[in-house]
Image 1: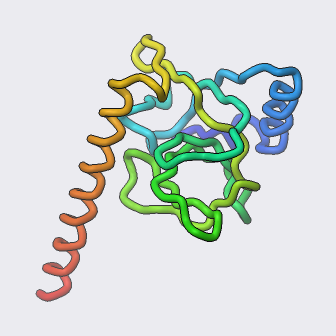
Image 2: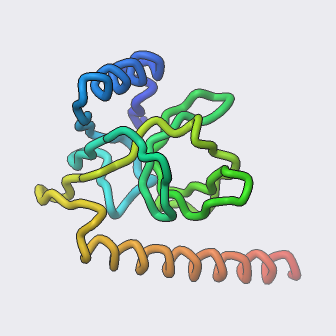
Amino acid sequence: MQTSLNNIIAPEEFTAALSEAFDRGQDLIFVPSGVSMLPMLDGKTDKVTFSPKPDRLRKYDVVFYQRPGSGQLVLHRIVKRCNGGSYVMSGDNQYYYEFGITDDDILAIVTAFTHKGKERKPTDIGYRFYIRRMMFKKRLRMFAYKIYRRLKRSK
């Protein structure tokens, strides 16, 4: 059974702790759970640093948000910024996209993370290459999956 943040602490308690840290001018370091952000983040040992979200979020930023409706807390990457002001999100290890996330849903942005004991920042050149490579591979996987579905449907 996978342990998620929602099983450890209520989302309301965590968002209150996050807001309190930000009000004191502090960032919050957290060990995420789950596999949706593999290989960037291992949900067992890696850590992320949450900071208050900036006025303008960019494509490929990793953000922490609360899903509308369910209230589930999620850490995913922005893959597209829509004209209406909403975002399309996806985990690096996922095949599907989540639509309709707004600025009001986003609680924080990841400004640093520790992976395999080494601290990295989204501004690092190696990280930027990682993002480009991951997004290219994701598009290839999705294209291959669409072909597979069409072939399977035609049989």
